[in-house]
Image (cartoon, rainbow, N blue to C red; front, side):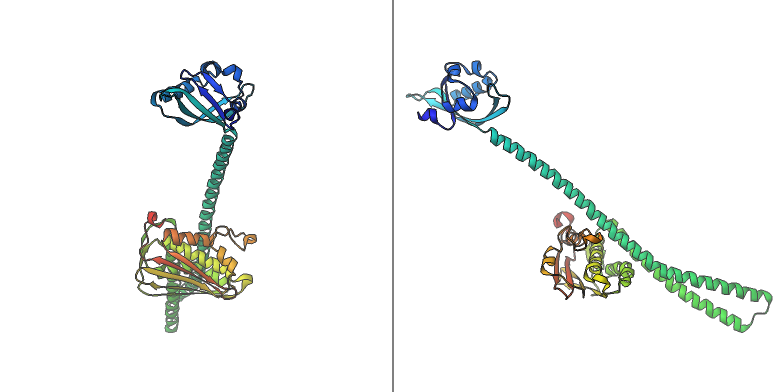
Length: 394
């Protein structure tokens, strides 16, 4: 009675693979009948599984070891759906210890296997979706970096217009004065006063031209260095103060247009061996983030950058503003990707996320944000003087 009412399918096979006993549960889960199987061989009853069953029985007869956890797939008679059973095979020994048969226990796991397949399919779909999301995020990050560089280009172009425009005006005036002076010389009526006046004009024009063209050259050089560094992630020794001044020069026009003052204070003699491109990118993002978020509705204010040594091995770069500050909830989410309070204005919320990734993963440093509502924001980047190699930083 216990054998026949067991919750799993049970069968007893002879050494030559004949069914000697079958319980009720096995007839239910396998769709077989006792009358059609008892006394008959496996090859007669289930020819598709005969070779596997004979191999297992032969192994048990030769080694005496049980065989467990074997999954068997097949169809029940009269059904087209594939079923799955997990089977366990144990030797049955006689009084003298010799093997007289094999006990088989079978439990249907069709639903479990179906669930596992569905779970694997869902997992594969989720992994594929995650990969697509990562690719989209990487594309957005790259787009944001290019956008930041584009804004830097626009700022430098605007700034260069001023000295170049002044130089053109001075050159035009000098050209007219030179033509007038040449005509006076040709007439032979040159006066000392005219000569002195022309010399004074030339000296003044030369001074203006030299100052304005030097300013234009300085801006172009600043942008060239920042642009090259951002394009090529080359490691080199550089002065963080000089790099900051170069970045600031490109962003000054945009900041002035928004009535924002930018002050840079750097401890002299600092030098780090790191990646100037990512460092410049982080500074650019921090300044733009402060300009956009700290001073809403065109409010004026100031942004300060302080650079100093922190112990023997680190340098601290602090960017602070006297803007509107952040609530605790905003501080907690500030570095999260795609978090922004200005989505309606086209912001994607990657600025500070990029900064965090650069400081931690590329420069091998750490970043700290301090802010209170109405009291401004201070972000401190603490980076090593010698940046780790990319594999170490990651």
